[in-house]
Image (cartoon, rainbow, N blue to C red; front, side, top):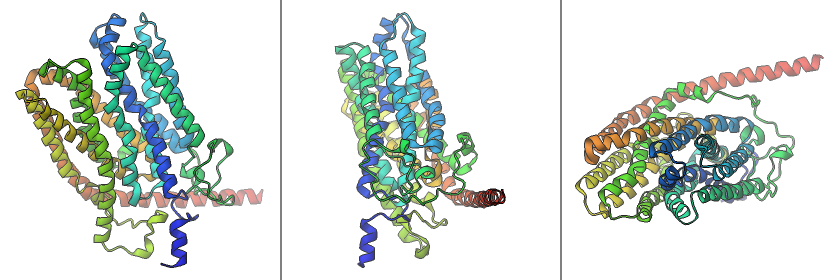
Length: 504
Protein backbone atom coordinates (compact mmCIF):
# COMPACT_ATOMS: atom_id res chain seq x y z
CA UNK A 1 0.00 0.00 0.00
CA UNK A 2 1.37 3.43 -0.95
CA UNK A 3 2.14 6.19 1.50
CA UNK A 4 -0.55 8.28 -0.12
CA UNK A 5 -3.12 5.54 0.46
CA UNK A 6 -2.05 5.16 4.08
CA UNK A 7 -2.48 8.87 4.63
CA UNK A 8 -5.93 8.84 3.05
CA UNK A 9 -7.11 5.97 5.22
CA UNK A 10 -5.89 7.50 8.48
CA UNK A 11 -6.38 11.23 7.93
CA UNK A 12 -9.68 12.81 6.91
CA UNK A 13 -9.36 15.03 3.85
CA UNK A 14 -11.38 18.03 2.73
CA UNK A 15 -12.78 16.10 -0.24
CA UNK A 16 -14.02 13.23 1.95
CA UNK A 17 -17.76 12.93 2.50
CA UNK A 18 -17.10 13.76 6.16
CA UNK A 19 -13.91 14.86 7.91
CA UNK A 20 -14.97 13.12 11.11
CA UNK A 21 -12.84 10.07 11.85
CA UNK A 22 -14.44 6.68 12.38
CA UNK A 23 -14.15 6.98 16.18
CA UNK A 24 -15.66 10.45 16.10
CA UNK A 25 -18.58 9.21 14.02
CA UNK A 26 -19.27 6.42 16.49
CA UNK A 27 -19.10 8.94 19.33
CA UNK A 28 -21.64 11.19 17.60
CA UNK A 29 -23.92 8.21 16.89
CA UNK A 30 -23.71 7.22 20.57
CA UNK A 31 -24.69 10.76 21.60
CA UNK A 32 -27.76 10.89 19.38
CA UNK A 33 -28.71 7.34 20.38
CA UNK A 34 -28.78 8.54 23.99
CA UNK A 35 -31.04 11.42 22.94
CA UNK A 36 -33.28 9.11 20.91
CA UNK A 37 -33.93 7.02 24.03
CA UNK A 38 -36.39 9.59 25.37
CA UNK A 39 -38.99 9.30 22.61
CA UNK A 40 -40.16 5.74 23.42
CA UNK A 41 -39.15 5.99 27.09
CA UNK A 42 -41.46 8.94 27.81
CA UNK A 43 -44.36 7.02 26.23
CA UNK A 44 -43.75 3.53 27.65
CA UNK A 45 -42.75 4.53 31.18
CA UNK A 46 -46.26 6.00 31.57
CA UNK A 47 -48.23 2.80 30.94
CA UNK A 48 -47.97 1.16 34.42
CA UNK A 49 -49.22 4.35 36.10
CA UNK A 50 -52.51 4.54 34.16
CA UNK A 51 -54.64 2.79 36.83
CA UNK A 52 -53.03 4.94 39.54
CA UNK A 53 -53.69 8.13 37.56
CA UNK A 54 -57.31 7.11 37.03
CA UNK A 55 -57.77 6.95 40.80
CA UNK A 56 -55.76 10.11 41.50
CA UNK A 57 -57.63 12.25 38.94
CA UNK A 58 -60.96 10.49 39.60
CA UNK A 59 -61.37 9.68 35.90
CA UNK A 60 -62.14 6.49 34.03
CA UNK A 61 -59.42 4.36 32.43
CA UNK A 62 -60.80 5.39 29.02
CA UNK A 63 -60.26 9.09 29.80
CA UNK A 64 -56.72 8.46 31.06
CA UNK A 65 -56.06 6.42 27.92
CA UNK A 66 -56.94 9.56 25.98
CA UNK A 67 -53.66 11.02 27.24
CA UNK A 68 -51.90 8.08 25.53
CA UNK A 69 -53.76 8.66 22.27
CA UNK A 70 -52.99 12.39 22.21
CA UNK A 71 -49.37 11.69 23.07
CA UNK A 72 -49.14 9.34 20.11
CA UNK A 73 -50.80 11.84 17.78
CA UNK A 74 -48.25 14.49 18.69
CA UNK A 75 -45.46 11.93 18.35
CA UNK A 76 -46.49 11.72 14.72
CA UNK A 77 -47.03 15.43 14.12
CA UNK A 78 -44.21 17.18 15.97
CA UNK A 79 -41.26 15.70 14.02
CA UNK A 80 -42.78 17.21 10.86
CA UNK A 81 -41.98 20.59 12.40
CA UNK A 82 -38.76 19.97 14.35
CA UNK A 83 -37.27 17.58 11.80
CA UNK A 84 -37.76 20.01 8.94
CA UNK A 85 -36.34 22.85 11.04
CA UNK A 86 -33.25 20.74 11.69
CA UNK A 87 -32.84 20.17 7.93
CA UNK A 88 -32.90 23.96 7.55
CA UNK A 89 -31.33 25.59 10.60
CA UNK A 90 -29.12 22.89 12.06
CA UNK A 91 -29.25 19.65 14.05
CA UNK A 92 -27.57 20.80 17.26
CA UNK A 93 -29.96 23.63 18.17
CA UNK A 94 -33.10 21.62 17.40
CA UNK A 95 -31.88 18.61 19.40
CA UNK A 96 -31.19 20.79 22.44
CA UNK A 97 -34.51 22.64 22.15
CA UNK A 98 -36.46 19.37 21.96
CA UNK A 99 -34.82 18.07 25.12
CA UNK A 100 -35.47 21.39 26.85
CA UNK A 101 -39.17 21.21 25.90
CA UNK A 102 -39.33 17.65 27.23
CA UNK A 103 -37.72 18.58 30.56
CA UNK A 104 -39.96 21.62 31.09
CA UNK A 105 -43.14 19.70 30.22
CA UNK A 106 -42.18 16.96 32.69
CA UNK A 107 -41.85 19.57 35.45
CA UNK A 108 -45.39 20.70 34.66
CA UNK A 109 -46.68 17.11 34.63
CA UNK A 110 -45.06 16.35 37.97
CA UNK A 111 -46.72 19.41 39.51
CA UNK A 112 -50.14 19.00 37.85
CA UNK A 113 -52.98 19.27 40.43
CA UNK A 114 -55.21 16.19 40.39
CA UNK A 115 -58.27 18.41 39.89
CA UNK A 116 -56.92 19.67 36.53
CA UNK A 117 -57.34 16.76 34.14
CA UNK A 118 -57.24 19.13 31.16
CA UNK A 119 -53.72 20.18 32.14
CA UNK A 120 -52.59 16.56 32.13
CA UNK A 121 -53.85 16.23 28.55
CA UNK A 122 -52.26 19.51 27.50
CA UNK A 123 -48.83 18.79 28.96
CA UNK A 124 -48.73 15.24 27.60
CA UNK A 125 -49.01 16.78 24.13
CA UNK A 126 -46.04 19.05 24.83
CA UNK A 127 -44.10 16.13 26.26
CA UNK A 128 -44.56 14.22 23.00
CA UNK A 129 -43.67 17.32 20.97
CA UNK A 130 -40.28 17.40 22.66
CA UNK A 131 -39.42 13.73 22.97
CA UNK A 132 -40.61 12.30 19.62
CA UNK A 133 -38.56 14.64 17.43
CA UNK A 134 -35.19 13.48 18.73
CA UNK A 135 -35.39 10.32 16.60
CA UNK A 136 -35.96 12.28 13.38
CA UNK A 137 -33.12 14.70 14.12
CA UNK A 138 -30.79 11.81 14.97
CA UNK A 139 -31.52 10.19 11.60
CA UNK A 140 -30.59 13.48 9.93
CA UNK A 141 -27.26 13.51 11.76
CA UNK A 142 -26.43 10.01 10.47
CA UNK A 143 -27.27 11.12 6.93
CA UNK A 144 -24.89 14.07 7.36
CA UNK A 145 -21.82 12.12 8.44
CA UNK A 146 -22.10 8.68 6.79
CA UNK A 147 -21.90 7.22 3.30
CA UNK A 148 -24.16 4.49 1.99
CA UNK A 149 -21.54 1.82 2.69
CA UNK A 150 -21.44 2.53 6.44
CA UNK A 151 -24.90 3.96 7.07
CA UNK A 152 -26.57 0.65 7.90
CA UNK A 153 -24.17 -0.07 10.76
CA UNK A 154 -24.64 3.41 12.18
CA UNK A 155 -28.42 3.09 12.08
CA UNK A 156 -28.15 -0.28 13.81
CA UNK A 157 -26.23 1.14 16.77
CA UNK A 158 -28.28 4.36 16.79
CA UNK A 159 -31.49 2.35 17.16
CA UNK A 160 -30.29 0.76 20.40
CA UNK A 161 -31.26 3.91 22.31
CA UNK A 162 -34.81 4.22 20.92
CA UNK A 163 -35.33 0.47 21.23
CA UNK A 164 -34.05 0.36 24.81
CA UNK A 165 -36.95 2.59 25.89
CA UNK A 166 -39.72 0.01 25.30
CA UNK A 167 -37.63 -2.60 27.14
CA UNK A 168 -37.01 -0.70 30.37
CA UNK A 169 -39.83 1.87 30.30
CA UNK A 170 -42.71 -0.25 31.68
CA UNK A 171 -40.50 -1.87 34.33
CA UNK A 172 -39.00 1.45 35.44
CA UNK A 173 -42.39 3.16 35.42
CA UNK A 174 -43.96 0.42 37.51
CA UNK A 175 -41.21 0.58 40.13
CA UNK A 176 -41.29 4.40 40.36
CA UNK A 177 -45.09 4.56 40.58
CA UNK A 178 -45.23 1.77 43.15
CA UNK A 179 -42.42 2.98 45.41
CA UNK A 180 -42.45 6.78 45.02
CA UNK A 181 -45.81 7.65 43.42
CA UNK A 182 -46.79 8.56 39.87
CA UNK A 183 -45.22 12.04 40.03
CA UNK A 184 -41.79 10.40 40.41
CA UNK A 185 -42.08 9.17 36.81
CA UNK A 186 -42.10 12.73 35.48
CA UNK A 187 -39.39 13.94 37.87
CA UNK A 188 -37.20 11.10 36.65
CA UNK A 189 -37.82 12.02 32.99
CA UNK A 190 -37.14 15.68 33.77
CA UNK A 191 -33.78 14.97 35.41
CA UNK A 192 -32.70 12.42 32.79
CA UNK A 193 -33.62 14.63 29.81
CA UNK A 194 -31.92 17.65 31.42
CA UNK A 195 -28.73 15.60 31.83
CA UNK A 196 -28.95 14.53 28.19
CA UNK A 197 -29.46 18.15 27.12
CA UNK A 198 -26.35 19.17 29.06
CA UNK A 199 -24.34 16.41 27.35
CA UNK A 200 -25.50 17.68 23.93
CA UNK A 201 -24.59 21.27 24.81
CA UNK A 202 -21.12 20.15 25.86
CA UNK A 203 -20.23 17.68 23.11
CA UNK A 204 -22.58 17.52 20.10
CA UNK A 205 -21.12 19.27 17.02
CA UNK A 206 -23.17 20.74 14.19
CA UNK A 207 -23.32 18.33 11.24
CA UNK A 208 -25.85 19.88 8.83
CA UNK A 209 -24.09 19.95 5.48
CA UNK A 210 -25.57 23.26 4.36
CA UNK A 211 -23.86 24.84 7.38
CA UNK A 212 -20.57 22.92 7.80
CA UNK A 213 -20.29 21.01 4.51
CA UNK A 214 -18.38 17.81 5.25
CA UNK A 215 -17.24 19.36 8.52
CA UNK A 216 -14.39 21.37 7.01
CA UNK A 217 -16.37 24.64 6.92
CA UNK A 218 -16.12 26.54 10.23
CA UNK A 219 -19.66 27.33 11.48
CA UNK A 220 -20.66 30.46 13.43
CA UNK A 221 -19.55 30.27 17.06
CA UNK A 222 -23.08 29.57 18.31
CA UNK A 223 -23.05 26.20 16.49
CA UNK A 224 -19.91 24.97 18.27
CA UNK A 225 -20.09 22.63 21.31
CA UNK A 226 -18.72 23.90 24.60
CA UNK A 227 -16.14 21.09 24.64
CA UNK A 228 -15.23 20.40 20.97
CA UNK A 229 -13.66 16.98 21.45
CA UNK A 230 -14.77 15.79 17.97
CA UNK A 231 -14.27 17.47 14.62
CA UNK A 232 -10.93 18.95 15.65
CA UNK A 233 -9.42 18.54 12.18
CA UNK A 234 -8.27 21.80 10.57
CA UNK A 235 -11.09 23.85 9.11
CA UNK A 236 -10.92 25.67 5.79
CA UNK A 237 -12.11 29.28 6.23
CA UNK A 238 -12.10 29.77 2.46
CA UNK A 239 -14.43 26.82 1.82
CA UNK A 240 -17.80 27.71 0.34
CA UNK A 241 -21.12 26.17 1.25
CA UNK A 242 -22.96 24.26 -1.46
CA UNK A 243 -24.65 26.35 -4.12
CA UNK A 244 -28.31 26.86 -3.38
CA UNK A 245 -27.91 26.05 0.30
CA UNK A 246 -30.01 29.00 1.44
CA UNK A 247 -32.02 28.43 4.59
CA UNK A 248 -35.63 28.09 3.51
CA UNK A 249 -38.26 26.05 5.31
CA UNK A 250 -39.41 23.22 3.02
CA UNK A 251 -42.76 21.50 3.36
CA UNK A 252 -42.00 17.88 4.38
CA UNK A 253 -45.40 16.73 3.09
CA UNK A 254 -44.06 17.17 -0.44
CA UNK A 255 -41.94 14.06 0.14
CA UNK A 256 -45.15 12.00 -0.06
CA UNK A 257 -45.33 12.90 -3.76
CA UNK A 258 -42.37 10.60 -4.48
CA UNK A 259 -43.97 7.25 -5.30
CA UNK A 260 -41.04 5.07 -4.17
CA UNK A 261 -40.80 6.93 -0.85
CA UNK A 262 -44.58 6.69 -0.32
CA UNK A 263 -44.42 2.91 -0.83
CA UNK A 264 -41.65 2.60 1.76
CA UNK A 265 -43.67 4.66 4.22
CA UNK A 266 -46.67 2.39 3.66
CA UNK A 267 -44.67 -0.81 4.24
CA UNK A 268 -43.07 0.51 7.39
CA UNK A 269 -46.33 1.99 8.68
CA UNK A 270 -48.32 -1.25 8.32
CA UNK A 271 -45.66 -3.45 9.92
CA UNK A 272 -45.11 -0.98 12.76
CA UNK A 273 -48.83 -0.62 13.47
CA UNK A 274 -49.21 -4.39 13.86
CA UNK A 275 -46.16 -4.40 16.11
CA UNK A 276 -47.60 -1.59 18.23
CA UNK A 277 -50.89 -3.47 18.43
CA UNK A 278 -48.97 -6.41 19.93
CA UNK A 279 -47.08 -4.14 22.33
CA UNK A 280 -50.08 -2.15 23.56
CA UNK A 281 -52.07 -5.31 24.34
CA UNK A 282 -49.36 -7.28 26.15
CA UNK A 283 -50.46 -6.21 29.63
CA UNK A 284 -54.16 -6.97 29.15
CA UNK A 285 -53.56 -10.17 27.16
CA UNK A 286 -51.10 -11.64 29.65
CA UNK A 287 -53.23 -10.53 32.59
CA UNK A 288 -56.26 -12.37 31.20
CA UNK A 289 -54.34 -15.45 30.03
CA UNK A 290 -51.99 -15.81 33.01
CA UNK A 291 -53.88 -14.25 35.95
CA UNK A 292 -51.23 -15.44 38.42
CA UNK A 293 -48.85 -12.69 37.22
CA UNK A 294 -48.56 -9.57 39.38
CA UNK A 295 -47.89 -6.07 38.04
CA UNK A 296 -44.11 -6.34 38.34
CA UNK A 297 -44.09 -9.67 36.50
CA UNK A 298 -46.31 -8.23 33.77
CA UNK A 299 -43.83 -5.39 33.34
CA UNK A 300 -40.97 -7.86 33.06
CA UNK A 301 -42.73 -9.52 30.12
CA UNK A 302 -41.90 -6.42 28.07
CA UNK A 303 -38.19 -7.18 28.49
CA UNK A 304 -38.42 -10.08 26.03
CA UNK A 305 -39.74 -7.78 23.32
CA UNK A 306 -37.18 -5.10 24.10
CA UNK A 307 -34.26 -7.51 24.21
CA UNK A 308 -35.19 -8.81 20.78
CA UNK A 309 -35.24 -5.24 19.45
CA UNK A 310 -31.81 -4.42 20.91
CA UNK A 311 -30.27 -7.58 19.43
CA UNK A 312 -32.03 -6.89 16.13
CA UNK A 313 -30.56 -3.38 15.99
CA UNK A 314 -27.00 -4.69 16.14
CA UNK A 315 -27.70 -7.64 13.84
CA UNK A 316 -29.53 -5.60 11.20
CA UNK A 317 -26.86 -2.89 10.96
CA UNK A 318 -24.11 -5.38 10.18
CA UNK A 319 -26.29 -7.27 7.69
CA UNK A 320 -27.25 -4.05 5.87
CA UNK A 321 -23.60 -3.06 5.39
CA UNK A 322 -22.63 -6.61 4.40
CA UNK A 323 -25.47 -6.92 1.88
CA UNK A 324 -24.66 -3.51 0.40
CA UNK A 325 -21.07 -4.57 -0.26
CA UNK A 326 -22.22 -7.92 -1.61
CA UNK A 327 -24.54 -6.32 -4.18
CA UNK A 328 -21.87 -3.76 -5.03
CA UNK A 329 -19.32 -6.49 -5.81
CA UNK A 330 -21.83 -8.40 -7.95
CA UNK A 331 -22.53 -5.46 -10.28
CA UNK A 332 -19.88 -3.91 -12.55
CA UNK A 333 -19.32 -0.30 -11.55
CA UNK A 334 -17.02 2.23 -13.16
CA UNK A 335 -14.62 2.42 -10.24
CA UNK A 336 -13.09 5.77 -11.17
CA UNK A 337 -16.55 7.30 -10.80
CA UNK A 338 -17.14 5.74 -7.39
CA UNK A 339 -15.45 6.85 -4.20
CA UNK A 340 -17.29 5.57 -1.13
CA UNK A 341 -15.15 7.60 1.27
CA UNK A 342 -16.05 10.79 -0.57
CA UNK A 343 -19.71 9.78 -0.72
CA UNK A 344 -19.63 9.42 -4.51
CA UNK A 345 -21.67 6.51 -5.84
CA UNK A 346 -22.89 5.34 -9.19
CA UNK A 347 -26.44 6.65 -9.68
CA UNK A 348 -27.25 3.44 -11.55
CA UNK A 349 -26.39 1.32 -8.50
CA UNK A 350 -29.58 -0.53 -7.38
CA UNK A 351 -29.63 0.72 -3.80
CA UNK A 352 -33.25 -0.41 -3.47
CA UNK A 353 -32.23 -4.00 -4.17
CA UNK A 354 -29.29 -3.79 -1.77
CA UNK A 355 -31.49 -2.61 1.09
CA UNK A 356 -34.75 -4.49 0.41
CA UNK A 357 -33.90 -7.88 -1.02
CA UNK A 358 -34.10 -9.52 2.43
CA UNK A 359 -37.28 -7.62 3.30
CA UNK A 360 -39.80 -10.27 2.06
CA UNK A 361 -38.12 -12.90 4.26
CA UNK A 362 -38.17 -10.56 7.27
CA UNK A 363 -41.87 -9.80 6.78
CA UNK A 364 -42.72 -13.51 6.50
CA UNK A 365 -40.83 -14.25 9.74
CA UNK A 366 -42.61 -11.32 11.43
CA UNK A 367 -46.00 -12.64 10.29
CA UNK A 368 -45.20 -16.17 11.50
CA UNK A 369 -44.08 -14.86 14.91
CA UNK A 370 -47.22 -12.72 15.34
CA UNK A 371 -49.58 -15.51 14.33
CA UNK A 372 -47.77 -18.01 16.53
CA UNK A 373 -47.93 -15.58 19.45
CA UNK A 374 -51.66 -15.12 18.93
CA UNK A 375 -52.40 -18.85 18.93
CA UNK A 376 -50.18 -19.44 21.98
CA UNK A 377 -52.32 -16.92 23.84
CA UNK A 378 -55.50 -18.44 22.42
CA UNK A 379 -54.52 -21.98 23.50
CA UNK A 380 -53.10 -20.77 26.86
CA UNK A 381 -49.80 -22.56 26.35
CA UNK A 382 -46.95 -22.34 28.82
CA UNK A 383 -45.92 -18.69 29.24
CA UNK A 384 -42.45 -19.41 27.83
CA UNK A 385 -43.88 -19.95 24.32
CA UNK A 386 -45.40 -16.46 23.76
CA UNK A 387 -42.43 -14.81 25.48
CA UNK A 388 -39.99 -16.51 23.09
CA UNK A 389 -42.11 -15.47 20.11
CA UNK A 390 -42.11 -11.88 21.40
CA UNK A 391 -38.31 -11.95 21.15
CA UNK A 392 -38.61 -12.79 17.45
CA UNK A 393 -41.30 -10.14 16.96
CA UNK A 394 -38.99 -7.48 18.40
CA UNK A 395 -35.92 -8.72 16.55
CA UNK A 396 -37.56 -8.81 13.13
CA UNK A 397 -39.58 -5.59 13.40
CA UNK A 398 -36.48 -3.53 14.16
CA UNK A 399 -34.73 -5.16 11.20
CA UNK A 400 -37.63 -4.11 8.95
CA UNK A 401 -37.75 -0.55 10.31
CA UNK A 402 -33.96 -0.03 10.18
CA UNK A 403 -33.72 -1.34 6.62
CA UNK A 404 -36.44 0.99 5.38
CA UNK A 405 -35.17 3.94 7.43
CA UNK A 406 -31.66 3.49 6.04
CA UNK A 407 -32.95 3.30 2.47
CA UNK A 408 -35.06 6.43 2.88
CA UNK A 409 -32.03 8.39 4.10
CA UNK A 410 -30.04 6.92 1.17
CA UNK A 411 -32.69 8.27 -1.20
CA UNK A 412 -33.06 11.66 0.55
CA UNK A 413 -29.69 12.32 2.25
CA UNK A 414 -30.25 16.08 2.49
CA UNK A 415 -33.70 15.59 4.02
CA UNK A 416 -32.82 12.93 6.60
CA UNK A 417 -34.82 14.47 9.43
CA UNK A 418 -37.79 15.41 7.24
CA UNK A 419 -38.13 11.94 5.73
CA UNK A 420 -37.87 10.39 9.20
CA UNK A 421 -40.58 12.78 10.37
CA UNK A 422 -42.83 11.62 7.53
CA UNK A 423 -42.09 8.05 8.54
CA UNK A 424 -43.03 8.86 12.12
CA UNK A 425 -46.26 10.53 10.99
CA UNK A 426 -47.41 7.49 8.99
CA UNK A 427 -46.44 4.83 11.49
CA UNK A 428 -47.80 6.71 14.52
CA UNK A 429 -51.04 7.46 12.68
CA UNK A 430 -51.58 3.83 11.69
CA UNK A 431 -50.35 2.68 15.10
CA UNK A 432 -52.82 4.92 16.93
CA UNK A 433 -55.65 3.58 14.76
CA UNK A 434 -54.74 -0.04 15.46
CA UNK A 435 -54.26 0.55 19.19
CA UNK A 436 -57.79 1.92 19.38
CA UNK A 437 -59.11 -1.16 17.52
CA UNK A 438 -56.97 -3.96 18.98
CA UNK A 439 -59.01 -4.66 22.11
CA UNK A 440 -62.39 -4.83 20.28
CA UNK A 441 -60.67 -7.04 17.69
CA UNK A 442 -59.33 -9.38 20.37
CA UNK A 443 -62.72 -9.50 22.06
CA UNK A 444 -64.54 -10.26 18.80
CA UNK A 445 -62.18 -12.79 17.20
CA UNK A 446 -59.93 -14.03 19.98
CA UNK A 447 -56.15 -13.64 19.94
CA UNK A 448 -55.54 -16.43 17.40
CA UNK A 449 -57.78 -15.17 14.61
CA UNK A 450 -57.09 -11.50 15.43
CA UNK A 451 -53.35 -11.87 14.82
CA UNK A 452 -54.02 -14.12 11.85
CA UNK A 453 -55.97 -11.22 10.32
CA UNK A 454 -53.22 -8.73 11.15
CA UNK A 455 -50.62 -11.10 9.71
CA UNK A 456 -52.63 -11.26 6.49
CA UNK A 457 -52.56 -7.45 6.25
CA UNK A 458 -48.77 -7.54 6.66
CA UNK A 459 -48.54 -10.18 3.92
CA UNK A 460 -50.00 -7.64 1.48
CA UNK A 461 -46.80 -5.63 1.91
CA UNK A 462 -44.59 -8.30 0.29
CA UNK A 463 -45.72 -7.44 -3.28
CA UNK A 464 -45.28 -3.76 -2.41
CA UNK A 465 -41.62 -4.45 -1.57
CA UNK A 466 -41.03 -5.98 -5.00
CA UNK A 467 -42.89 -3.08 -6.62
CA UNK A 468 -40.62 -0.57 -4.89
CA UNK A 469 -37.49 -2.48 -5.97
CA UNK A 470 -38.77 -2.35 -9.55
CA UNK A 471 -39.86 1.28 -9.84
CA UNK A 472 -37.42 2.76 -7.33
CA UNK A 473 -34.50 3.29 -9.75
CA UNK A 474 -36.74 5.16 -12.22
CA UNK A 475 -38.12 7.41 -9.50
CA UNK A 476 -34.59 8.08 -8.21
CA UNK A 477 -33.30 8.92 -11.70
CA UNK A 478 -36.15 11.42 -12.13
CA UNK A 479 -35.23 13.11 -8.84
CA UNK A 480 -31.57 13.32 -9.86
CA UNK A 481 -32.50 15.04 -13.13
CA UNK A 482 -34.73 17.50 -11.32
CA UNK A 483 -31.99 18.18 -8.75
CA UNK A 484 -29.46 18.89 -11.51
CA UNK A 485 -31.88 21.28 -13.18
CA UNK A 486 -32.39 23.07 -9.88
CA UNK A 487 -28.64 23.35 -9.38
CA UNK A 488 -28.30 24.94 -12.80
CA UNK A 489 -30.97 27.45 -11.89
CA UNK A 490 -29.22 28.19 -8.58
CA UNK A 491 -25.88 28.69 -10.36
CA UNK A 492 -27.52 31.04 -12.81
CA UNK A 493 -29.13 32.95 -9.96
CA UNK A 494 -25.86 33.27 -8.07
CA UNK A 495 -24.06 34.39 -11.23
CA UNK A 496 -26.73 36.98 -11.91
CA UNK A 497 -26.53 38.29 -8.32
CA UNK A 498 -22.75 38.59 -8.61
CA UNK A 499 -23.03 40.47 -11.92
CA UNK A 500 -25.63 42.85 -10.49
CA UNK A 501 -23.45 43.47 -7.45
CA UNK A 502 -20.40 44.13 -9.65
CA UNK A 503 -22.33 46.53 -11.87
CA UNK A 504 -23.54 48.45 -8.80
